[in-house]
Image (cartoon, rainbow, N blue to C red):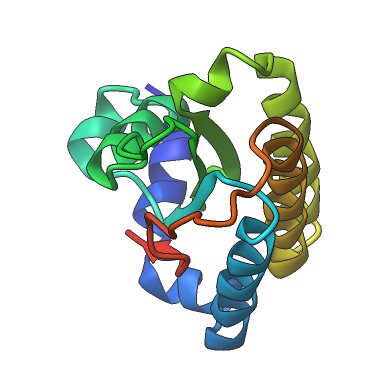
Length: 165
């Protein structure tokens, strides 16, 4: 059990999310998702969670494990071509996880996603939350554009707005 992590999670709440992601930042993220989705057939969701609840925290749940749960809860897997991508931020840990549906996962190695996560986390450590997320959305969008070019009849299968958990 990591006491320092527990304290960090217990002291990180919705107010911390609001400071890191004010309204104008959430709007910029939504706009970036909408814009990049015009260039590809994939679906991007961004979700930020202030901290883990106490029971999962005490059980040692990782950001990756939680991201997989959020991927399911938000139905990111439920796209026609299995090309949904979740960018998940566990704010207390400043940990970013990217979970890609099976249609994308077979085309890209985990190292691709990890490199994007590392760049985002570096921006977050510098307090540049908006820039970090916008970079992540753009980078994921570039990969989706390469592997899933936009179709003329492409529907928007998921909301573009960020999810605050």
